[in-house]
Image (cartoon, rainbow, N blue to C red):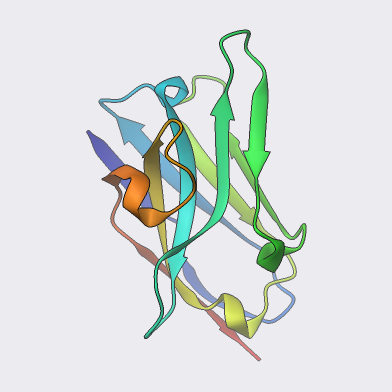
Length: 125
């Protein structure tokens, strides 16, 4: 399994950024696909998750901290995971990781089966 994240960079507060995660070796629908971030000195925490029901329905999850500013999505082939981040704030500065969470294992980092490498997002004030 490989998860290759990209798209991080240095932006100003209020800007937007889209992260991408190219995946191989796993089937998205067998997991909750997610984005986590980790700020210096803090724990890694989820910022968005998406999964699919057997009938093809899709569910998304966002913690209150992202307040409708972030949107998780996939391409049609479900081989690339995206995170659209709008109205970025300095407190969004962190390393962002894409991840595959085991189904039914909640939204904590301890439930992640596979991690991608991180991509750094820095938001200046």
